[in-house]
Image (cartoon, rainbow, N blue to C red; front, side):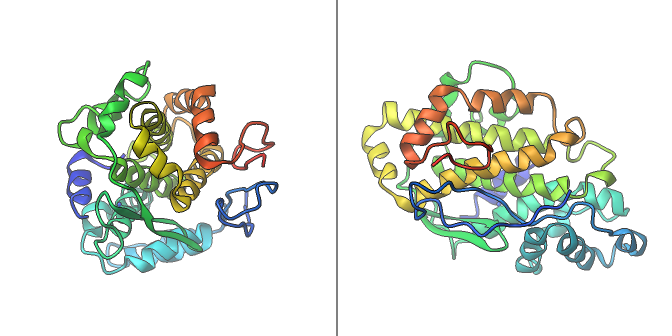
Length: 310
């Protein structure tokens, strides 16, 4: 999770090998064709030379080269954000291993920086999202919304309690609207692969909730849709008729499934057991029903969780 102080600052700125498969945008794909989220990663690519040569002076070059080999989307984001002044707040430079571990926070926060740049995002009006090297969502209409703290009554367990305290019960963060929900989910979905592909170097606790962050922020999005439908019908009608937002929601749902599966072998290092419990709750019938109604796509019956059934 991004640290509470840093997150507040950034949100105020309005952050085995796999081969990518070319897929159409979810909203534009034929309803009869399954839509899958995938992206290129090579988590076993050799980076021993980069580790041996690492110094506090070459960290940015190392970051870009490391991800170019293992997760090209991370390298592309680092190139896009290379001149950002805030990297130094997030990156550990004491050793390569601590550097790799700090990538969850660093990539998470730099995603916020890219997404929430005022040139791309008009707070509560339209947003942007760095999804991967090949795809960035821009000018996605949000139509304002309602405070995300309204989802609290739908959370019946304590699995996400620490994050609930920061993002829902906090007097400032709890009043963020859909903008805050989508921003945190997108940052969580870059922070997770950032450490999944370098997991063998992670020894401490700097990335120990990466999976929890992704699962919890998807929880918030699904519950936000349920509250929109039940309590804000006019708003629900607006967002349900917005193709770019429907497309983003579906992509983020499938993307969360994709990276939670990729990171599952590293539970304990990259997340707690609660991440899987939150994920199970995310697939409750009432959550899947609102997702399918909102996006117009079926995920029930899909052979893989990162794909739609139709």
